[in-house]
Image 1 (cartoon, rainbow, N blue to C red):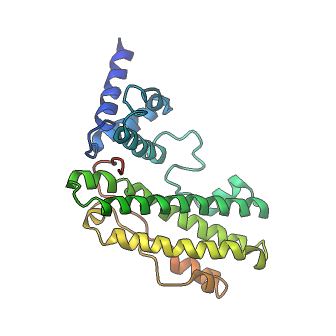
Image 2 (cartoon, rainbow, N blue to C red):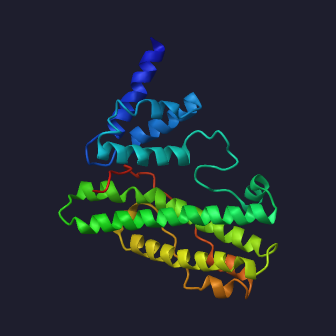
Image 3 (cartoon, rainbow, N blue to C red):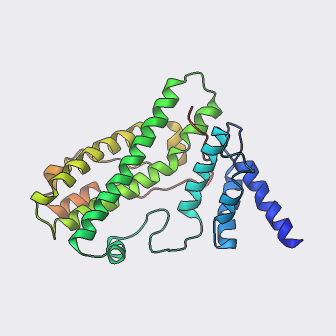
Length: 253
């Protein structure tokens, strides 16, 4: 009986956070789901209720499920805490985990840039969708835009990790071999700078978190003028979420 009561309790939070209503779910329900992952030391329960929550057949419910899942991955129970969900890990710990051979670091840098590229494409899609449908209600717009809160946080962390890894790579790999890495990082830098500038122009995002501002500096040029200087200049400010953040999003049309 006690187990049944507990199951129904967190299922109620799941129902209220993940449904077909195009409004941001309340943070108290998402927080309860996150706490449940620590209680169960697993997030399996979140996947087990997918059919009951109409996730496979309702696009809004599916969108909200993915946003809640993203939040759980960032802040929920960690099976392998060496790489936390919020990607806040120092370079030494990361390199100790993946290995310090040039091949491993080379692959790691590619993976980080791949991940960052996916998030940059995602934010472009969300902004384009919101701009396309001018008739969206305020709740509907926020339901889409709020998904970018975690995107901003992850982009900032990935940028920092990529920069540190790329600098580390230049200590063990020739300049010529890393030309492609530098060109790709430089392109992603400008995309990320534009993303942060766009977000900073929105009062909605400014009310939710502190958005980093990337400096006006060409990484490709500065990288070899002084690696220590570059790391100091382009490091992002820490992100600070306000306590009253609400909701995690709905699906773009």
